[in-house]
Image 1 (cartoon, helix red, strand yellow):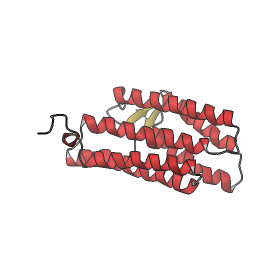
Image 2 (tube, rainbow, N blue to C red; image 1 turned 120 degrees about the vertical axis):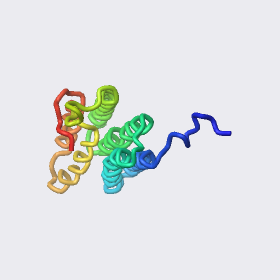
Image 3 (spheres, rainbow, N blue to C red; image 1 turned 90 degrees about the vertical axis):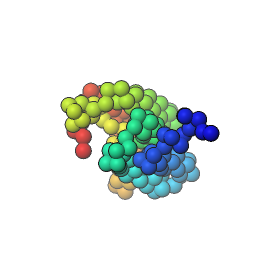
Length: 177
């Protein structure tokens, strides 16, 4: 007889979509470690698609749950905080001290942002986020290809991570899509 806390009682269709987001985050990390930049970025972008869909499907099907909210946030840590930070860290042409600082600052800011969001939610009846949402990292990792194509300094590209870190923990109101 299964326990009342059996995982099967918690996981629903939208949660499987959230798990796909987290799995893509881990795949991005693996691709970054092996310097498959295209696949690393693609994995983060696809994770963003799943992140966009999971909550909408949960609400549409009436399957939204506190478990799903927490799972979504944990998967976002993999895909939109750790994976983008490891992607930046994999840029060996940049001094290792800068890369380590980026990973630490970005990780701390992202974790603080998600913890605050899990407690406070959105502002003005769901119209605004407080601070820049973590999935904005998708734009940063995608912009890597522009910087590479136009042979712009990757130090400037990495500065975008520091700016995003600051904006994540700020109280700036960002209109929700």
